[in-house]
Length: 338
Image (cartoon, rainbow, N blue to C red; front, side, top):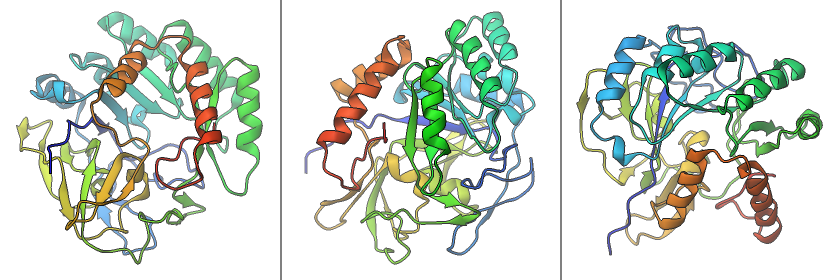
């Protein structure tokens, strides 16, 4: 079998898995520094939520010798702004192709703008609007400030989870568009009302599907304690394999593909970035929409996203609309709703 091209990879640093919101459709409802429980219907797992301090993150990420292997560095959570050194970390970490923050935007955005100016750096903010807790006027006021400072993502300016039995996401999407922000709806996959629901997809996230598969991930998550793990599922386990620790500056080779034996019990939020294949034949079982190789088209996409051109939101919306009209309704490689 010929060698595959390199994967288009992202390093996703969870500064904390905690969140200050208590959304009915999310599992990140934990206290800072307290042990965290996976809320799935399968056997409950517990993991440490102990955070590293800001200077440790800054030193470790700045000294990381494999930055060129990653197209993006994402700061996420939970809610990353809950970390006490949030502004210092996201602005003093430098040398990566692109820095992004995935956030509920509950922090003082003016402090972020000032910190970026002081450190002469840029970070792209990708906010999610959670209508159970966020206030629309306050949220859009923050978007205005970020856009004026050139820090708001023009690729994903606002994302909203579309719940199966709620109409608010559609209403708020229209409100954002009237305010000049191209909000995107995302298919609901996962937690709702404190209970985990496996996505109704053939080949991923089914409690009966526990066979052995070849498994690849385009995201390298980093846990709040600095451990580098293989995919999002591993951030919910204490006994998973890790590949060193960012803050200790100790690293092990990360394989392009591994063999797993708990297929079907993988965490659904990992699905978009992963691929599963038959171990004997290499036949593809599942591939998420964000599983990409570092091809010419992917490099162009990443370049445009990193440049954060103002026309990107409209272009992405047009492409998603066309894809949803033209593609067959199948679980593999599903696009966003719009």
